[in-house]
Length: 307
Image (cartoon, rainbow, N blue to C red; front, top):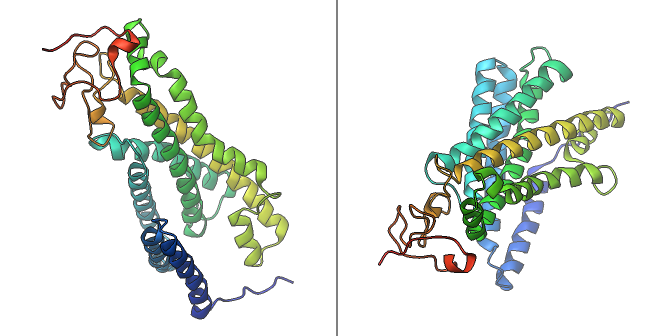
């Protein structure tokens, strides 16, 4: 006999929210600086999830490919913005938003469609009960992997820009110049999912499996769905991370394989970035002189002084 789902009342949610407010008060007393972001995030959680609930009810009642695709597009664009917002040194212009968005589209959407058509096989294949939650889980985890990896890549390139320039001066290609940084960035994006798979069922019960069990699904059926989802999330996150890091690493260099001005991938802040010949002392983008943190002479990089 399948147990009935226990309904939650507004009072239950209010009590849980009160615990969040209590935590925010303690953070304010301790001057941790997270009180305002915590309360805003909690409020966004309530509003966003209530809106999603209303939208999903409408989608379930009018299950058309057009509306499901529109919902997926909105989710993709929001995820792309979140990837950009989490970057310490983001790319300027379209690349700041487009890089993560395109990578997630190529990975998450393709994996989600493949899973719906070939594995889960609902009728129709775009049935929102399956398509929207699956795409949401794929986008959410891929978003985290891409954000971590691209942030690691750009921060590593910023910290090691002198080393990169030295490698270029010695004849290395752009790919060889950032190979170690790119490898570390890819690892940082994939490690969270590897850890999640390793700990599943022992350290923690994954969210989808827990939700299905609470909803009354047989435990073994919930386990099978969770295994499928974790494999799909890992594949989507891995492919998305590989694509995003490759595109981002290529964007660090211009068509002549020179390291671009850091103003293009550091939130617009440049302190004497790259000149025409390695380090010329004046950035060709912003006109400021010399790096504050790096002296090309120390790395043995040829450069021209601008008097």
